Length: 234
Image (cartoon, rainbow, N blue to C red; front, side):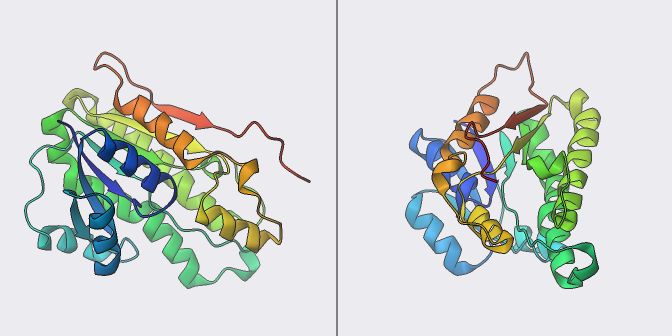
């Protein structure tokens, strides 16, 4: 039975993926930013292990994980799905919001991966980084978020090159706009009407990740881009 550690399992793509994996009987370790969110996740996924760890405080990531007690000795995957976004032009960037996006989207995933890498190596497992189309091309007002996602792509590329001899595979998923609470917030900040039917379902991205997880050991998928088929409204 495979064991997966997931961040961001309480919402959006992470929630859809946790549901898929739990339904098929895999073991889950779910990171939650608060005790309340951890209790919600345990109720949704009986038998799952929860770890309270606020990714907005990267200096405490290792401490929080160790405080939770021993984690599984082998992790077949670590899936980074948590993320935050706040749009603003560079001239108006709030330093606190800039730092939060870098911490949650980039710094904490790097530190968490470093901490969990021995368990992933033992399983010859997989690290999945849920990135964004903003990690491929940056638009006006997206500088902070895109910078965090460009950095996450660079981290994945370097990690992939370093870990190939250990049998660890690394995949970056680049979903375009997906119907999640984060996307609803983005539409609000952009001053546009949010219509979830126009965008990718979180379940579709989750199924893409499942395909990567279930790939035979003789191959890897370094990057996957997922785009909606409905043209963007102007």
